Length: 126
Length: 126
Image (cartoon, rainbow over all chains, first blue to last red):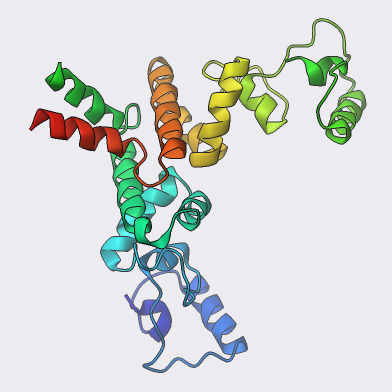
């Protein structure tokens, strides 16, 4: 998880790791134990995670990184960032959860996505 | 609809229209009656619509342009293009329809999107 922080990972993209390390060195960021690991979304996006990261509360963990990968592929990080920003803070958890659900459904079923669930439920209701 | 082709539209972005006309002139494109108008998606994206445009069969009309605007805002044109390209041609109509439905639902209800319909139907099924 903290591979890009510690620089001790045994695998991964060496060139990218080196570049990130150089960037951190230039920015004067120390690599001590107090370095906060990026949230799952920023880890996936290979970017620095700021204090006010819009994704961190909803895609914080390693599992969050996997969920974010699906969200990023289907909706795009920028669109999801705009969507979450437009919603009041107390509703963002639900929005992130439903966006994740839709993204997973679309990857599982590229033609119908979660609309297949709606169609199946409508059949049951009839 | 054919505003950018005929140059006779009474409203719209004059600067963009002029730029497009200049581009067409440089490319040697004549502005005669045989010019094919762009599909709704390409009109919205203000780009040239090619013969093999991936969006044209599903967002062809003026109504298609409005539907594409929602799809573009929620999913992004690039993501939808990739999605449609990854699906066999005979399933793309359904995919475009479900993507449009999801996009409209997300714009109407930014927190739950079409998942609100799933939750409501699940309540009815119980």
